[in-house]
Image (cartoon, rainbow, N blue to C red; front, side, top):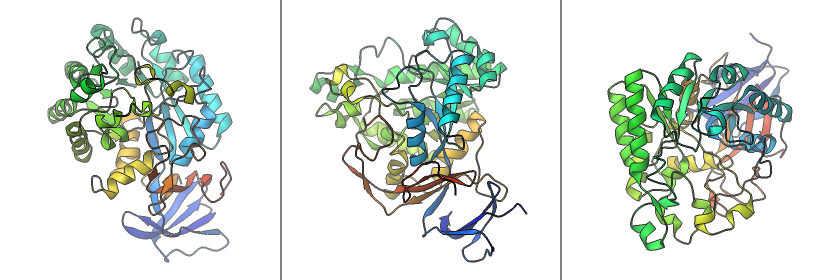
Length: 433
């Protein structure tokens, strides 16, 4: 047996009370509470907190290099640690764009300098040079430098021939392509969902068919090429119906959505709150219900935050002028728990949606909290509600619809390799366990 260093007693995992034995950064044993005996180790009372594997967020924007006033890698990883995320996949829309090995290495170096024991940043390389959609970025160079996927991020690929070549090129290096599904012309200039609400508010809308058309295109390409494609932040019924049929036919497509598409609908735009401006936009109540069903049934494979921090002054403008994006790392697990508490999801869905399936899709490490697995885990208190204020958020971006509102459940501690990278009680990051 590995050298035993610590014993965490009285935590809840998969509906049973357990003790967790940790040694050399790995889990030595998980057993019924009170059945593990160990001498000469530090013993921690888990106080009945819920045990979860450390989470993965497969879609974040960390802004560094180039826009550190919005977020930098250190502040983004701090928010990740507090939110329960041990790995975050950082999109390529930095300045300069992450379309070459030098930028990829810089991102990794900054992440290691800030948190050498994790959380870890997993760079997503640009699909095209400068995200311009005109010339393929060097996939092999990006893969070798440490990118775990490729994406043109929020700039949809209008050129279908180039997108086909990108899928083939990425596959040569074992990388998945993540696509932002939006017809670049049909929704141009839109700032919210197209429909009755946008008409009443006098705002230009983005129709659901704008997303669904690109979803259909990507599915057809994946079928024709027999190559995988991952569809980013799906938001509407039309899209999930297409994805469901594709999966029934065995087409290699996976998809993600965000908590905000499961929580809120277009009615939140009343009052012109710029913190609810996102792309794709919040859709109708019917779309929200369809998205929830798709997540429960596995049509949507994973949840992501699409963490998009902005400076306060950037959101303090008219709705039409505001940038898209919600800062999500601090609140994602609480919002997911709200869905669990409301009966929309089960507890078992959380590790599936926020860890295991993401690891499978993008070939990342994860654990099932079994002996021999890395001691990467979160302790979560479902009974502790908290008010989301700028002061308690660790991300520089305070742009969330949750601002000054109470949300249920809170991460109390986060361990990576058996080390405590976040503790609510201690209030410090990076302290050794």
